[in-house]
Image 1 (tube, one colour):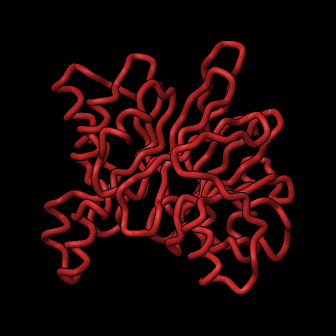
Image 2 (image 1 turned 45 degrees about the vertical axis):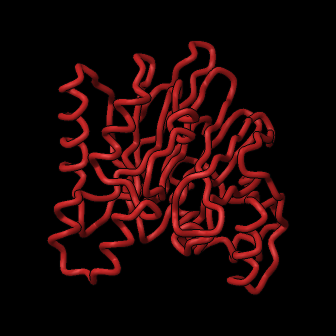
Amino acid sequence: MKGFCPLASGSTGNCIFVGTEKTKLLFDVGISYKVAKERLEEIQVSIDDIDAVVISHEHFDHIKGLEMIVKKRQIPIFCNSDTAKAICQLMEVRPKFKIFSTGESFYFGDVEIHPFSIQHDTLDPVAFTLQYNDIKFAICTDLGFVTKLVEMHLKDCDYLYIEANHDEDMVHACSRPMVYKQRVLSRQGHLSNRACAELLDQIYHTDLKHVFLAHLSSECNHPDLAIQTIRDFLAKKNKAVTLSIAYPDKISQPIYFVEESKRADISA
């Protein structure tokens, strides 16, 4: 498959497939090896063909399946040095790390990857922009606050995979402990629906084709609420973009690259 497809998104696990002419990548692998294999097969990709894994940070919902992948296949694991150190403390096996520097672009195959800093409660969390030929897209979740750096890197993307974790009123009203509420709502927590809408307002351009709303809370959000909140906010600014949900328990809508027309086709 030439394109990308969220395989899982949320606190139960995060994993995104990105494929090009020469390269097949997983961004995070917070689901089991078995589940990753099954969901890749749904988009006609074999897990044995994955060339590398790129890790955003060391939280369990982003690395759950990493140890089994390392045991079964000696493929490169890309992350920064702080994340690599944290992973080594959490896993019995040692991955074949390829260390990148946060803020510096690197190539793997025919994809240019740029990791940039975000605000989250881990050692050195990053989000990513990816450039493949004329197509630019971004993977940006697990951040509690939108910095100017985030806005800068997300501008001019054709596609976005971006966090809309919670509705703030639902967080305040839920039965979870106060420490949970404080973490989620903090600058090292997660983006709310409204914060996501405000970010999209800032980086909106007419060539923005599709936005995945990712890492939705199962308790403090709802897909319909996330989409409606963001759609209504943008409508007040006379802006509109195609929105869809990145699901926790099934593959989401694949995006297929069509290079010659500098666009991608969407297939349900």
